[in-house]
Length: 201
Image (cartoon, rainbow, N blue to C red; front, side):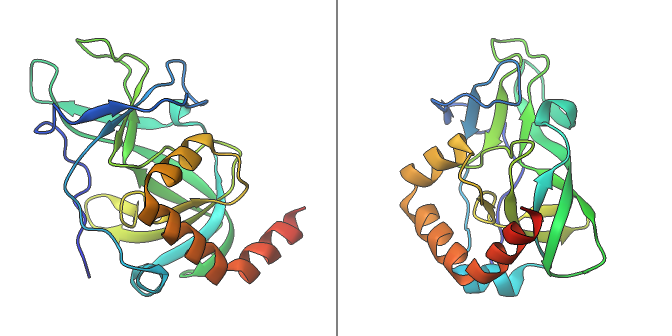
């Protein structure tokens, strides 16, 4: 199993970029991408085999209404960041079929207070984009003793299914491997996705 560097931050001060699309769930709206060295997943087969839980559903609350945590090392330099999100499950494709919701540690956090200019913006790890309330996603999750359930490959185990998440569209467009992974994953699970959408609509 390949390991992914998840919630580290303070040594990457020069490697932040502001996404050009607003995130609708916050008052500030800019997403500040924090770049890290990471080893992700190779294929949909690896996602499927390594995931402990595969689910389709929607976030119950907006990021701004969820518990964001940012720890600092002084002088405004951050150490770790994450947000605990409650995810309402519409279908479990792998794992405990009796679950109707799951708590996820998302690699993004709303900046509520900062010494510099980032108040109400969002830190997000690598190419991760925060989930939008009311939109449908397919998630490949691993359970970690420290973090609870986390998304595999940072962003590589999260796929918006209704085509409404503009930030994810932008991330997919600029990252060709993420684009390939999303296309192949949605193709591999097209019957399961279709049955969920049909049942709900």
